[in-house]
Length: 582
Image 1 (cartoon, helix red, strand yellow):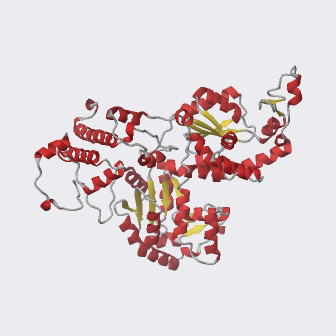
Image 2 (cartoon, helix red, strand yellow; image 1 turned 30 degrees about the vertical axis):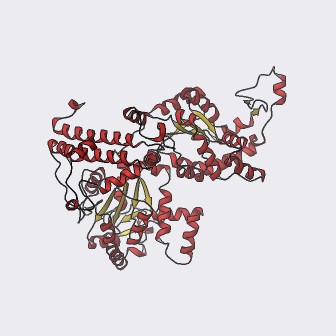
Image 3 (cartoon, rainbow, N blue to C red; image 1 turned 135 degrees about the vertical axis):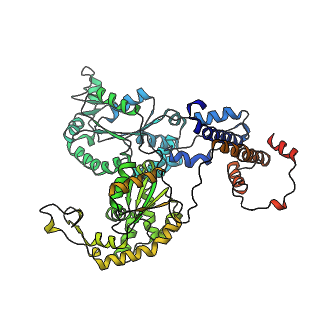
């Protein structure tokens, strides 16, 4: 729709559209036979597995445009998790959902039994644990779930995962395995109702059907059925109380991983009413606050205002705020393997090494909320070693916000700071005085004195150069001696891309080219470059076409060639060029 754009933008739109079209054709001609190169993009979008397109003979498609359309048109069905306590009504709602949306209903128990029955490697591993009376570990269960979700029916129809994950460990393992959901349904029912539902539950051992003596009674005239109904041992009030307690111990951390895609439903309502509200939720289109998923580092000296700006960034963009101190304490408190390692250093009076802190940060970034929302890393990295460790861990920010405040103001801010030991709230005797009744119990932290603050500031300046140098093309230095609202507006504009980085060493931004200049660049430089790349790919026929193409593009980059060897080149034969174009 050329006419849909203003004349001053039309040239850019058409130029970029032509380049995008050429790249699509190039990828089609490359013959992507296993889609392995597409995996990183698909995982960032939440796909559990990449789509696989195989060409006849594994080479160039007979009809490239049809192939491209097929690539672009492949879709997967909805991916849903339903959670709730025992007897919350998950089974009933699963029936409604599978009937209305056609998704594949998956129970981990059924999937496990299927693997055991088929004698797969995962099934044999699970059977080995069960034969010893041991619990099947999460790693095996996740493998079984992933194998089931990879089957064609789940890939085409979508899936409904019933009552799984149940623990934080399972939720995090799902993220690491690349299993992501689009929507999460959470049924809430009071404990007393749950117990009543369970106590009256009776199971037909022949059909597996479940009845309830009060809410869904079995037919009384069927004497044979009434005689064979059984009351499961875990459906008593005592057993149910333990199951509810175990559920409550884990549900908070599980739902926390899916809170951005989760909606809670009252499980006491009429089952059809619940089904209707769930259907409306599943049919709704999620909305995002930002055009992309930002990954942001905020840096600055102590008392530079990072905490205040973090609150604004989280509110503006919905990012997950990550504090290394909070994450470290959480791991130590929960006794995780990383936490136990850190505790060993802390107990001996040593510093926790950068590699371990980075591993804790990396682990947090595997959580689904971080994957889908983006992250805000608060005050980390602080040293050259930490910068290097982050880079080696493949943690790369899109934006680095550096709050710049003069040293004397930092000292004044810190020396006036007071901590409420009861609530943890921080006040300032001048800028944010405490309310009445609180002032008497406030304390000044030992590192908020003028002497201690001067040492902290000196340490900060010693390490600042390493951070600004490494992130110089992504970093904006922002004046932190202004009203918080004004700072927040500049931070927001920078993260959105409206303001450029302003660190020293960054090349100045060139003015946008005129439409005719953009078209000329595409015609004279980009299109011939793409055609030559395509010709080289077809002539060479490498085993790894995309890897070959990436190397070719780097080595033959028309803007910044790695080696200037034009003097050694023979004159170009126009006939050879025309043959290449053909």
